Image 1 (cartoon, rainbow, N blue to C red):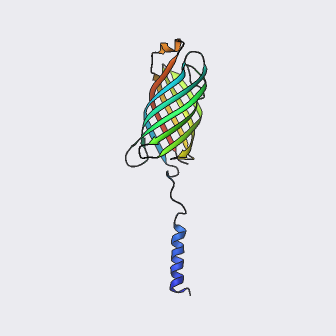
Image 2: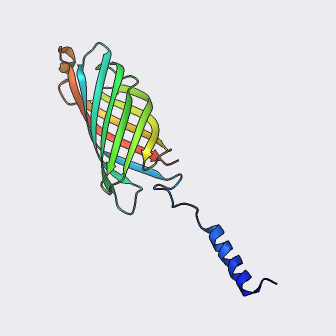
Image 3: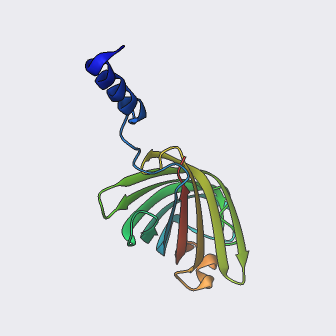
Length: 176
């Protein structure tokens, strides 16, 4: 009834119907990317015992898993501010992090929620946000940083305050 030409058109239509309309996204939906590594955070002005508005800059040296068969090195650069930071806590930091992966990909993460807990000199900051651009765009990001002062704790008692902390960070991205 359709002939050879009709059969070819029907088969081609079925093949095309199964083909994706657009290239696959850079990160598959529901994929988890986990990055871990050393972190160095600087505060301006330095942290003292009294809460005050503080800007922060952090550099992370990540090794990321979930991007291929081997870990991918990445560099994280974060900037933000905390409206009432002190040596006792870094409350509600609003942070933007740019992650540059060694394979050329990038992610921009905006963190809007945070908690900070300090126990026996160790501060653990947990940030939650969204990947707004690049690899994992639309996904959620969770970052945990375990930090120790880069200077003696007595720096909190000085007028210039504690200028920085060092630690280990873990970034988890769940693609959207």
